Image (cartoon, rainbow, N blue to C red; front, side, top):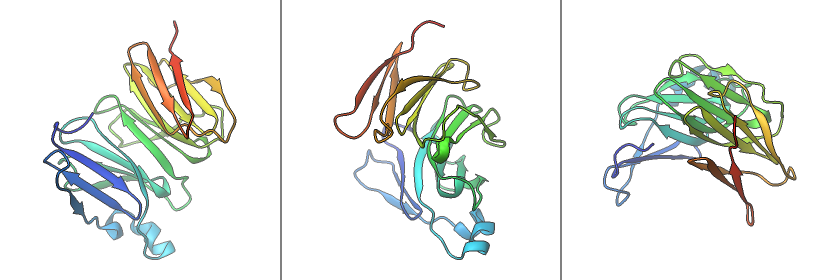
Length: 202
């Protein structure tokens, strides 16, 4: 979900965080204090501006960012300020994050990494879904969830506790985005990848 129809937050490379309150006509660039947010990493590696790969807002004020160093940031004021919930210099990069409620969310990334929270991100638990392929996309609807990545798509019917493979594709086909609607979903990647998905009965 977005903030309001006219509000949005966007993220990108080298620590970029942008926001708009007028439907995208103008954008404000935010400066985050990386020394405060990821102090231990900077202490070990030197100055760094981490790549930010995904942002998800569950309400007009509360949202999360996922990115490099397995980092997850949290905002409760529509993206004006952020606090770090998770990061580590040896953590795989996270490429996607999504929340189904203020408490329940998933984050996915390199090496088949899938993380799940049930307390708004205070704690994140690794979920083994049986792959080491990179995961780049998440979509949540009710108790159902879909994750996709390099040659794989997985489906969950129980709030992300367990997962089963749905599709097998060449590892060179990378699913980059998934959208759910009703009893189905569509996953997309590099042209001509367009993959319709049916949830089926459980």
